Structure formats: C-alpha cells, structure tokens
Amino acid sequence: MAKSRARPAVLELSRHERAWPGSRADGWFLDRLGAVAGRTRRARVQRVGEAGADSQAVTVIRVAEAEIGADLSRRLQSLLQACFPGYPSRSYFKLPPHFRYLAMTSSGDVAAQMGVEFRVVRVGDAVLRTFGVVDLCVMKSQRSRGLAGTLLAEVTELARSCGMAFIVLFADDDRLYARNGWARVTNRCTWVRINDHVTLGLARQEDTGAMMIKALGQQPWPEGDVDLLGHLF
Image (cartoon, rainbow, N blue to C red):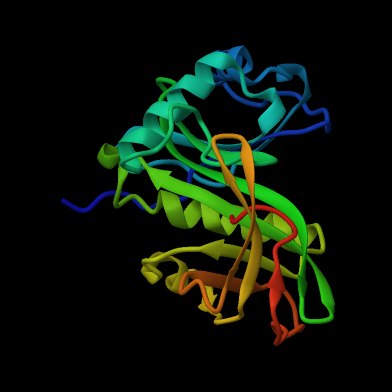
C-alpha cells in the first residue's frame, strides 16, 4: 500500500525565540518534547508540510546532544539497537554526536534519528569544514515514508547555511545516499580508534570502501590522504 511522502513538519530547538503557532495539540507535543529535550520556551518552529491521512503525523526536530534527557536517550538506544544488531547499550556508538535530527510521532515515539558531528578534516593540504552523518536509521514500522531522505535534506540545508564544504559519511550500502547526492571517494583515511571509551591508537587504511561525500558548493573534493582528526563517523 502506498504511503504519503509529504514532508513532515520541522521543529528546531535553538536560541531563537518564537511563539508556538499551533493548536493545543501542538502545545501538548511541545510540552512532551520539553520533558525530554528541555528549552521549550526557546523553540523555533517551521511548518513545511503535513503527513498523509493514512499514516501517523511526524515532526522532525533538531536538538543538541547535551540537551537530550534520560527518557529520550533510552528511546534512542532502543531504536538504534533494533536497527543495528550488536549496537552497544547506550544511545551512541563511539562518542555522542554534537546534535541529532529526530523524527517524532504525535504519540512521542522516535520514528527515525540521525546524529551529526561538526568537524574540520584534512584532505591532502586542504582543511575542510564538514558535517559527519552517523547512525541514520528508521523504525521498521515507519519505513517507506521518505523519513531518511527528509533527515538528509534537513542536514544538507543546515550545512549550506553554516558554510560547510562537504557532508561526510561512511556506508556499506550506498543506495540511499547516492539518491540524495552523495558520491563514493577512495582516499586513504587515518582516524582515532576508540572502543568502549578507550583510545586504542591510530588506524590507517588504503581505502575504507565506505566513505561518501556530498559537496555543498563549487569546491571539488581534494585528492590526497584524509585525516579525520578524530574517530570514524
């Protein structure tokens, strides 16, 4: 059965003040969100579409990692463990991301999530401002609604507005990302090896076989070795 692919609403938790423009139901959702993410009085809301009548409404939010409360963290852990077999018993894999995009249902469930890290990386002689995408996943019952593509579109828009040069990710299956503007690259990579909050040293590899980049301007992806200046996205 075909499902609506209308773009969900977007709620951005930020320092910009704006009155909540919706109904009492919208206010209830914001209160629920505030219980897990805080800062309800500083929410900036942007309506960009509605879910179809055949599926539960979904709102996309952007929230700083440090503002995620214990209840939401547990729900994120549950989603990540359901989507990624062997995922550790926490809401992040190696280190917490800087912020996340979350697709939230009207009942408060996390339908999809995507972590984002802001990092400069060195490629050859160039130092580049990048976002790194981590742990993009969608709840099984919410798939085929275009949620993953929506999250990727949101981070692309933000990255452009922030002057990022590229968005970087690592994926074995590139189909989703290729459809959304990412391309494979084969640079040799160096990164910090971390396991269970212990630094194990540096990893060097000819080609990870999984690195993908999305250019956000006219600058071409440089040739040369990549130093991620941190752990693997």
